[in-house]
Length: 376
Image (cartoon, rainbow, N blue to C red; front, side):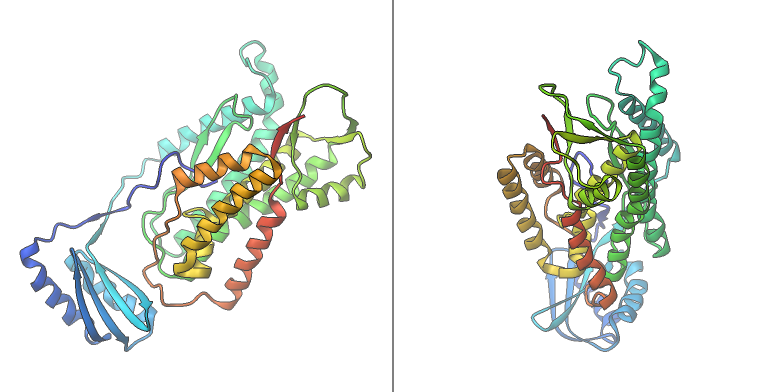
C-alpha cells in the first residue's frame, strides 16, 4: 500500500546555474539538440530551457542521445508534445543521492511483524498473556506476505528498468488500528523512462499481491464456517466486494438469512489484501492506479484524479459510509492529484498494456466493498 503521511518530497534539486551564464548555456544546449530536433521555437522559463520543433529521430533514440549530452551540464531532458509541436524541456535537475540504510527497512519490518501479530491476536493487552500472541501469527504472516509481494513486485520491475528505487518501508500501526499496519511503500527516486515502463512498474505491485491474496483468501474460507448472527450483540463486519461475494459463494453457496461467515484469520488477511489492492488502484495522484491512469491518459490524468475524488465522495454519501469520505480526504490532503511526467512522454502505451490498464479499472470495481468496515 503506497500511503505516506505527507505529500511526496521532491526527488531532485535544482542545480545552481548563474543567471548570467544562462544564455551561454542555452546556446550550448541548442547545439546538442539541433541534429535531433528541427528547432522552430526556443524559450527560457526561469532556469529551464525549452526547444520546440520536429523530431528527426524516434523518441527513445532522442532521449538516449539527449541524456548523455545534457548530463554534463546538470540538465535532464523531458520530451512531450503539445499543439502538434514536439518540445524538449531541459530541466536543471540533479538527482538526489540518498545513502541506503537497510537497517531502517529491517527495523520497520520487524516492528510491523510485532504490530500485525498483536492485531491478529485480538488482545488489547499482550503482556497479560503473551502466549495469546501466537494466535495472531497466521494473520500476520499472510498479510505481510501479501504486502511484501506487492512492494517487491514494484521493486524488481523498477530495477529491471534501471530506475532508482528504495527497498520497501513497512509501516507499523499497533492497536487500536485493527490490522496492525498502514501498509508499505517504496520510494521512486527517478522519473520513469516512458509510459510503458511507468505502467509496468505500477501494475506489477497489485497483480503480484493478488497472486498471494486470492489463494490465501480461498484457503482461509476453507477454514472458515457459517454461523448464526448473535442477536443484539455488536460485531465488526467486513464488507463484501463483488469478487469477495463470488469467492464466498464458491466456498459456501448461498448464505441463509440470519447467518454469516465467521472468517479464519488467514481469510481475513486475504480480505485485507483485496482491500489494499482496491485502495491502490484508485486512479489518483501517485497511487498505483494514478500511475496506470497517467500511462493511459497522459495529460488528462489530473481530470481523472479529480473525477475519482468526486466519485469517492458520492460513494460515501450514497452508502452513508465514512470510510470513503475519510479516504477521499486523505487523498486530497496527503496524496494530491499531481503526477510527474516520464522522461519520454511521446512514446505511446503499447496496445497490450492499454488493454491491461483498462482491465485494472474493471478490477477496481470488482474489489471495492461498498461499505468496507462497519459495526452492526
